[in-house]
Image 1: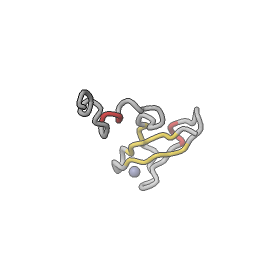
Image 2 (image 1 turned 120 degrees about the vertical axis):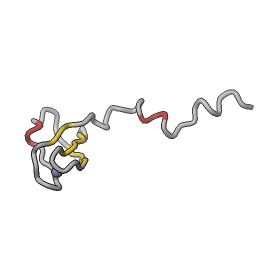
Image 3 (image 1 turned 135 degrees about the vertical axis):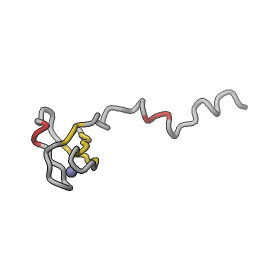
Image 4 (image 1 turned 90 degrees about the vertical axis):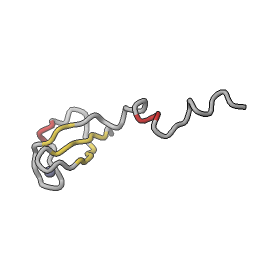
Length: 65
Ligand SMILES: [Zn+2]
């Protein structure tokens, strides 16, 4: 099941929801302030290349011994 990340425009908190594909965005509400004024961020389900270079010293250890 895909995980969707949201940012609440009302209180600014970020939260994630498990939702089926095709769930309308208006169906999501902030768990903190119950506001439905939320913005869907990119799913953390399919972004592996972006955060891959953070904790992987791949270019540092190549060409050593
Ligand atoms: Zn909120």
